[in-house]
Image 1 (cartoon, helix red, strand yellow):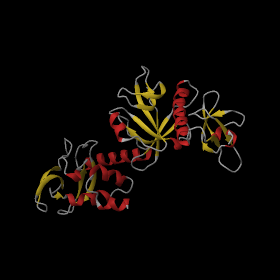
Image 2 (cartoon, one colour):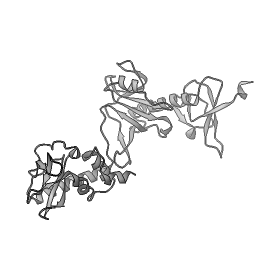
Image 3 (cartoon, one colour):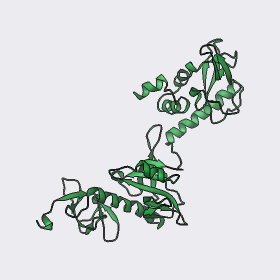
Image 4 (cartoon, helix red, strand yellow):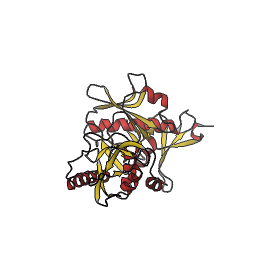
Length: 320
């Protein structure tokens, strides 16, 4: 069977004569392209019906996975090079807001000066792409996922090094990197809407505390109001991380928060008390008190912060 009659497979990326990795949708019919992995000549299929793609001979030992993996590595590295040369946009890492799943784009750090394909780290493991600082030290690694995620052994070996796992098939624009996993000392993300909600909750807490003559309890606290079961008057109820697990409140705590004895459970734990009569606000009523004031996605975020275990009923219902 002649080389021309050998069966072929599709690949989305081709290497142009100038070294640029080009997606088939952007390819020029008059330009010769080769496989980014094995340099086999590719044929651009650009008909009116089928999606544009490159046809790759199947008798070369190469594979669609290898071609996509190598091509994506080159695209990511080239995006950094073009940015630093002033001929391309600053790459962004696209992550999902942990509370509402909205896409959040974080610009790549200005400390990144260059990119190196197949960068070997000091621990002997290789990043698909190493993002280097001005002194050629590793700032962050990129791992390209085609069919297999970074295994646990490699993840453990990389230790404290920061790295991002990116699904190759999701890279549409070379300077937009959809992150499946972000590991190491990398800043968290919030979408603008969730950040605005968080700021609103902070303002609410300060206002409620002030209304009862209490100082600002600090950023670790959230305040809502509830009618006291004993005297019937409105009173502030403060929440702090892990309150549902009876964790100690951050100091200095509001004067209405202290260790009290509960006759119901016959045990003492840090709790809220009515500002008027001192009656204990039992832990049983805390989820209800909180989720009467907040809906999804606030409820999901606050549940994970204040009631990590067990999941209160109101949020369990939201997730089902």
